[in-house]
Amino acid sequence: MTRITILACATLVALGARSDVSRAQQPQGPPPYVVGNPLGLPVTPTANGTFEPISPNVKVYGAIYSAESCSYDRERGVIVVPNRGVPQTVQTNDAFVSLINHDGSVHTARWIGIQSPADRVRSTPALVLNEPYGSDIMNGMLYVADRDGGTSAADASIAVIRRFDMKTGAPAGEVRLPGVDWINDIEVADDGTVYATRTGAFGERPDPATWQIWKIAPNGTASVFVQGAPLFQPNGIGVDPQGNIVVVNIGDDAVLTFSPAGQLVRTEHAAQAGSDGLVILPDGTKYVSSVRFGGISRIRPGAAAELIARNVPNAASMCYDAGASQLVIPMNANNALAFIHIDR
Image 1: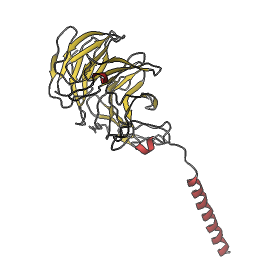
Image 2 (image 1 turned 135 degrees about the horizontal axis):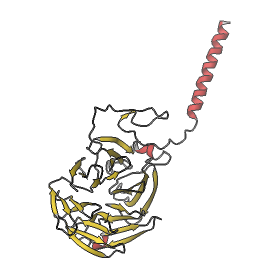
Image 3 (image 1 turned 45 degrees about the vertical axis):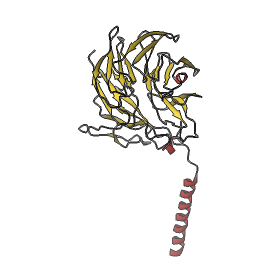
Image 4 (image 1 turned 30 degrees about the horizontal axis):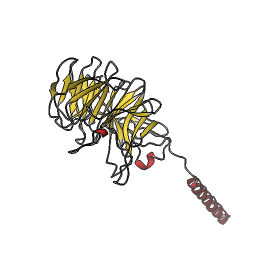
């Protein structure tokens, strides 16, 4: 009797183990797409939704890695910062998006891009975010100027404008620009039209034909909006209160305003050359950052430029934090953000 009982138990254990193995060998479906939790634990959301926020007496700073641009999310009241991560030649699909509070502290260290590169492509929907430069938020969407390829000299880089739903963080579509290696900055008009700068060639004898502004219609149709001089390695771009398209050059100090038809209607000048970021306020005041010389220019309507800040290292494509009336300036390779309060 004892022997039978032992054998029966052993058989049941074996059957149970075999059942577990069978379940383990069943193909697993793709993991659902998730975004990272705000600071607290767990960092990655769980199926049961368990989450405990970080203690209110703790402030965290950081979560910035090679950021080139930022945008302000009015709904959450946070600064949205795409981080490029490591270069494409080191690891593809390594970029992420962090959410930063008005005071520079971290709200969410990794909102988009909490997964490893390997897990990103297996999720539903799949996430691809390689090396984002310019960004903008419009009509509930985060737009980023990203690129595919460029992993080696033999792997051609192709510019891609990617969209993400601001409520869920999920990928919401993309537009590829064949023949364009990368896009620097973008601005999205109210109707969803994207204006994008292709900075183009540098060097002693650069080809002006590579200096371009692209226009991507809401249906995804892409075309060259402006090409060549007076563009001179165009970078930051914006739309003014009249609906004109404004662009600044790295190659000089020009601040160029084009009509919606692509005609040059105004030329202003920043206090320094080497322009990168551009912010345009509702009253038409422009702020321009110089990535080469570190100054921040203010250009009031009808007035000459004045320098309101100096020597900001690698002052890249800044954004306006309307909730705190301040400019937020990614400092690129310095892995930091600079904040400048402005009086309206």
